[in-house]
Amino acid sequence: MRNKLTIAIFLVLVFGLTAASLLKKPVEFSENENRYLAQMPEFSLDSLFSSDEDKKFTSLYETFITDQFVMRDQWIRLKTYTERATFKQDIKNVFFCSDDYLIENYPAGDFTSQTAANNISVLGQFVEQYQEKLGENGVRVMITPTASQILKDKLPPFASPYDQQAFLDSVRSAVGENVYLDAAATLSGHKNEYIFYRTDHHWTARGAFYAYQLWADSLGLEPWQEKDFNITEVSDSFLGTVYSKVNFPNKADSILCYQPESAKMNYRLTAFNGTSRDSLYVPSALEGKDKYTFYTGQNDPLISIQSSGPEGTVERGRKLLIVKDSYAHSFVPFAANHFEETFMVDLRYYNQPLSQLIEEKGITDILVLYNTENFATDTSIPKMLK
Image (tube, one colour):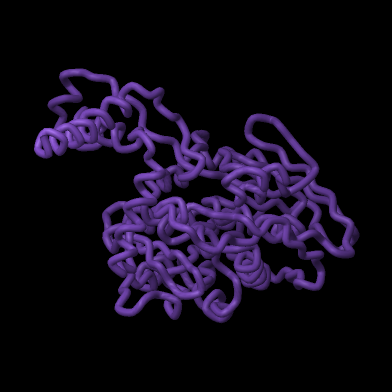
């Protein structure tokens, strides 16, 4: 009877959970993980026998089952609890660090791949092309290291993440000293401050502020100081993308809002779908899981911001284009105070020629702003040259 009971439990776990996963309605988006989940792939003989693992039916089906497995979040948490009980410090490429930090450990292959090398080459060509059109000071590049590079003092003993400085040196060499902005040095100078979230892969608004000052200085603009803003904490319950990977209890993060203190600034933000608002912030985002979208909203193919303010703030006729990932979202509330119009382009979703946008909008300044991991792995970077 004991053997039969063991077999019955085994069959229920193996077949019951699988059947439950197949029978439940597929979830399209995981709010906890902040990503779209794999859907049931379409079967064909070509996909079944494909030599391309990314298109092979069996590989796609395995990803679908993994993403749609019943009680997925609870199983992830159970696995993390089990591994933490054995004092493991690196789970799912996440380091459990001091001061309640969860820091992602990115594979070295992401930075040494052919995609990474191609992206650096494309960036070099892009800079050369638009320096000729906009002038020597018309283009700036800021590829920002992630927390594993800057907050090394918080990593657990014997942790050895990839040294991103070698990748950054390659970027610097490709674009030139004049164009390259050394965000690594700037952020390292403030590493004891709250410049990266504990539970998310983004920098905080304060980290973005220090990067903004570096960028503004390089252009000869007078950067605003923290005293020029009314800084308020609008949330203390942010649990970000790194937390979602391990689903393990952790101290939540704070979201800060920087509003101009004395200068009366006016903004008009327009998204790609035509919707617009008179604010660079989205208060409703603080009610959901992805509170980082408080800063200018979700990733969008193209966002435009029209700014106006007292004499001496916005430079009339000057228009900024930021080619970016989501790090730019907490950066642009500072940068937009200097330009009559600011555009943010996300090449992952923007499919029109970038050259056409630059010409039609009369762009005078360009900033390429990514974190190292996103820039190294983003297959849409070649769109820069279209």
